[in-house]
Image 1 (cartoon, one colour):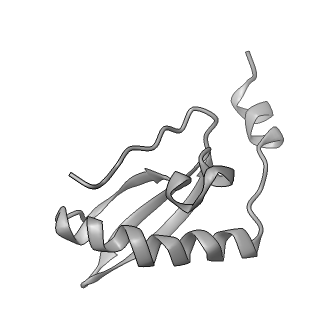
Image 2 (spheres, rainbow, N blue to C red; image 1 turned 135 degrees about the horizontal axis):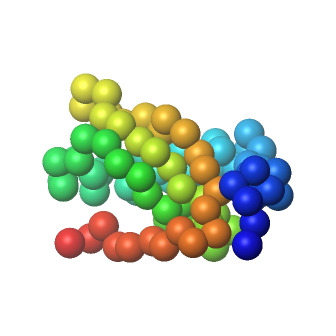
Length: 85
C-alpha cells in the first residue's frame, strides 16, 4: 500500500485550462442545483465536467448568492452522484 506521501507525489495535476473547464461547468450546471438544495459548502466529484475528471474532487463554499471552488484534489476512489433529487 502506498504511503500518503507517495500517493501525493504520483497524483496527476490539473492544468489551468482543466481547472477553468471544471469551474465553467460547475457554475453553469452545478450551482443552480446547489442553490435548489440550499447547499452552503461541501465536496463533489468533478465527474460532472466529463469522464476525464471523475477522479478529481472540488471543495466549494457559498459566497452570498454564488459559490466558489476552494480547492481541487485528486482522489482515485472518488464517486459521483446525481444532484437531480
